Image 1 (cartoon, rainbow, N blue to C red):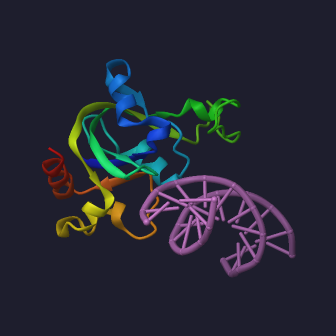
Image 2 (cartoon, rainbow, N blue to C red):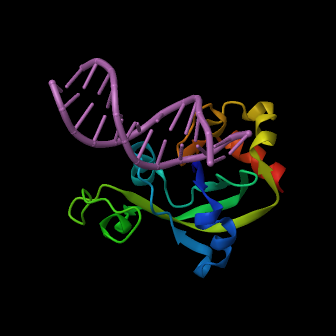
Length: 153
DNA sequence: GCCAACGTTGGC
DNA sequence: GCCAACGTTGGC
């Protein structure tokens, strides 16, 4: 089993939105970065666990945990000219972008804001905390995942 | 293949 | 809202 961190702006789709979704499940569409795409397409498997991170938030924080319930399949929103993430170079025949489905597991009693994470020594190598890091789908070490879940309650 | 210009992300 | 750090695009 692998561990990941997914970023979402809460104004777009928050963990509370996920809690309200049917079966607490959503498809993770709109990723338009090749490195993140490769993780979604090739490496993220059913049963993997996901830290849910609110970016561009007040405060930005890890807010809960989800699990992967369906693995990589084409992101059809790329084919919809009316979709904000439309990409004319992606097609059903030759999909360029992929997504997975995730289901909510827990919302942390205590969200863990970014500045607080930065103070925890055992997390200092996290991709999230790297200067200039922008990857919206990123791998997390088991030790980091466990530490964060413990802190989040 | 280089790199300037441009667009996006996301912390602050 | 600002802007630094990235990623992508396209001229050459």
